[in-house]
Amino acid sequence: MKNAFLSFSLILMIQSLGHAQTTENSNKDYRNFPLIVSVNFQNLAMPFKDLGSNFSHVGILVGTEISLNGKQNWAQQIQAGYYFNRDAGNGIMAYTQTIYRPTIVDHFYAEVKVGLGWQRVFHPVDAYVFENGQYVSTAGGKSQLIVPIGISVGYNDYKESTYAAPFISYQVIPALFYNDGIPLNFYSLFQVGTRIHFK
Image (cartoon, rainbow, N blue to C red; front, side):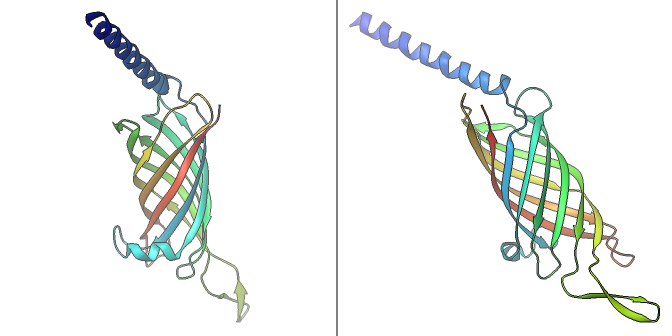
């Protein structure tokens, strides 16, 4: 009986060491340049206001990231994409963010991220400019400097083969230089997506 207990204890200890090694490898062997794909829901709104309206304006973002310390907990990410917003105008955006991503429990993690980027917002209706004494149609739009600030939760179960790490994110995006009368406005962005780490 004593030998059976010792054998069982030894098996548990080996499994624990194996699990610890897997966790350690997940940090040491972080694979740079995963494919990040997400569906996003965008809105022209103050932070945490009118959140339901986000889901009327869908888009897509793609990107990648690189670890800043060889682990998953510090990364630099870049994303670009397009969104549809029939109220405030469709747009394209590209930005980079520095991400702090601590593991909370097991394989679940949280993120805090802040960055800098650019977006181009197109007019939601026909727009005109006054030229040579008359109004003429213009595609137009407005470029803005953006400062995306976000929080996320996700799940990263490290595997040696190709695997996906899904996440949900909410971002507040201050945007500068819309026009002389509105030097600063705010957008909000929900993201549901995944990082795909290739073998």
